[in-house]
Image (cartoon, rainbow, N blue to C red; front, side, top):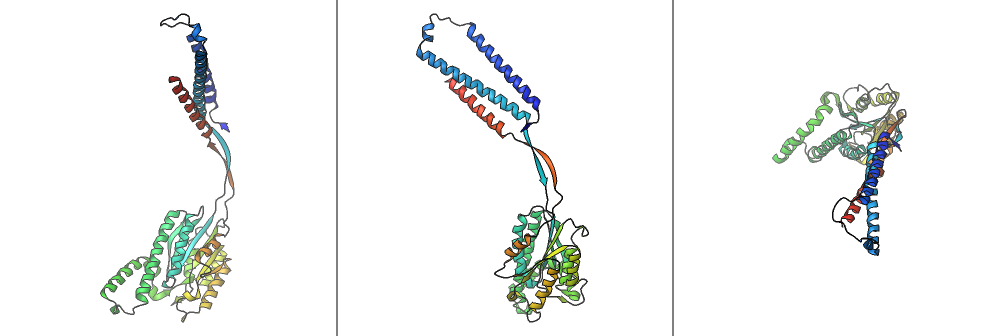
Length: 369
């Protein structure tokens, strides 16, 4: 422990010594001098009685306790004013991990996407030092959340995405999978359909841009867009991670600007690790048109090419377990910077002040009695 203003302690000792000296002189003066009033003769007999001696002894003890309480109050007050503190060495080692959640927002993945966003919301709340972003894609890609450490904002945007996936489920289960034409719907269902369509268009205005000419689920472009949303790719002082969810059901009308293999190589060259989450076979969309084994093996090869891991979401391996495993990815740290900080430690002096007040007030109350 050290004292920031040592001169306050010196001043306090002098003040307390002066008060004690003054009290001593004042008590002597009261004892030796007659200050007026009626004189009483033959008090010696009273003074020599056992009751008087006992009461006077109690009085002196209580008065001493009162003075001690006052001195404790004064001393602790001066200690508090002098600001006792301790120095400690603070080592700053901050995680420098950038994580982008890259989601294929095709209707075939609404269940898996909803599960991922729901779980990641809890993960985000426990982050410290990492930056996180969200990229969504179908025909085209949208940087839905730029890299940020504003976790409240990330959770807010994930809530919005979760609502989007629920709208997709509603539309798919109650309309796309049920009716072929609008004329097959009741008026009430048409009204609900148009309401859903309007809400979905808010999200899909960006992800389905030119879908009539380009197709959908452009996986390579989705991964490439997520990669190039990282700032300062040329620098290697950050661990870069992409958590990508897709079923790899490419529906491209023309060659992609960047296919999955090219995007995987670009991630590898830019030291970005991709972790892939793939749906289980029973949840695979259109197995009569796409080969589950082919789609999963292509995606797995692309992921493992970057040094990442490929996961299949099953009942035995839920999203929570997958994301927990991904979180074990080691984060790069900044160079350790140490500094010294002064931390006030007023606790002992404050407790002493409270004790002094209790003693002083208690002794004064007893004297009054």
